[in-house]
Image (cartoon, helix red, strand yellow):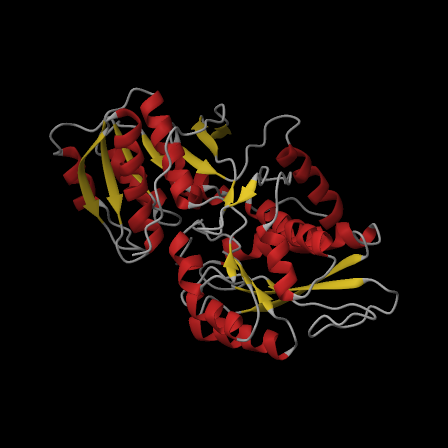
Length: 398
């Protein structure tokens, strides 16, 4: 399972183009003068990362229904086209090609292996790719300058986690790292960098694990024997690995606070970690405080879709992906890939359910966007006051 949430966490979003009387490449006429933004989704709906991709797809479908029910936005309507890649790299690439064959030329990436291959396939055919749940900067970088993300980066969430640790008075940290995946490899590195720069914090040790691991006895023993003892433990570990790690950690009597990444912002986290989740803090794409946009989104989603959300924020990310792309099309008056990309990179002060995109960074092609914090208490999610880090690391592309 790969999350860039991931996450790491990412869904394959494919944006086609179409308008009546338009010269947009690959367009399909709506018949009434409107422009149709076709959004395809090559996602894992039945495989190992379905808990991430299914909510993303549902959030996109909710946004399309909402927009179309109002007659569109400035003449722009939305169509979602979803294909199940079953969490398989070959199937993901095949689905992307099928979407291209159907004239769908803008894709975001799915939460499976082969994300870069899919991105390069689409951009090589003249398309553009949106990152979906891609917080890992190396993915957008490796695809090229026709790729972008609409959610915060790992640099940003690592810095916010470090700022939180510094504000709590922690100065010695222990990290848990899985080098096989950039999210779990570099997220601890961003934390370490920011921890040192913000308050002089030090990482006193690192334990290595493998994705999908279920027995964390060796890693916990290293943490137990650390000298000096850590004030806090930080990792990019994500579901389903987080629960077994935390249970083993707490059963061993290690009480040091744990801070993690957005790959844990799922209802499954509480079920898998049980009481070991108490006290955990992790970064997330929103905070459902009373009266917040995210809380209102949950209400709106239930009305439109006839069911509650399956995750805490992944549907909201899907919803915001669609709305941001529509805003980009509105700004340029076109759903043609090149112009749409221009509109995306020009987004500024755009309020979304998952926070406002203040602007897009032309270097990383990530938005300057708020990172939220979630703290577990008594089996429930609480939301500390948002913080802005005093320092954010530069991206590491491997």
